[in-house]
Image 1 (cartoon, one colour):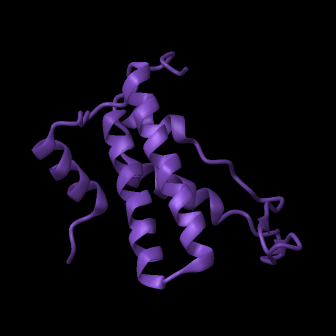
Image 2: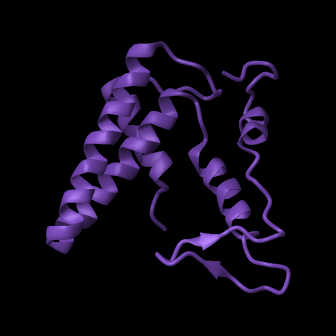
Length: 135
């Protein structure tokens, strides 16, 4: 079984020095901005390669986005696996009461009557985020 992206990126952060917090924490503007800039640059590369290919480069750029996203989460002490699980739980409630899925003309799934919004704050709280610390 392959290590999780979180484990791999944590190993990188420990070896090369970027912060890796265990508890959800607000960070100073510099590292927060740096993570955002890295993510924007990687996302732009994905957007470019998705249209022009080749497929192996698209796979590489997608992996870079995930890697940087996990790194940004580590800097903030966010357990991204737990947040993704909560987002997935929420997405799975998007079907209608009859089990049908409604889509927009571009294919995006629309939220049905049984939709439950994700509760990311509670995920962070379970990891030690203190109440009242929300930004």
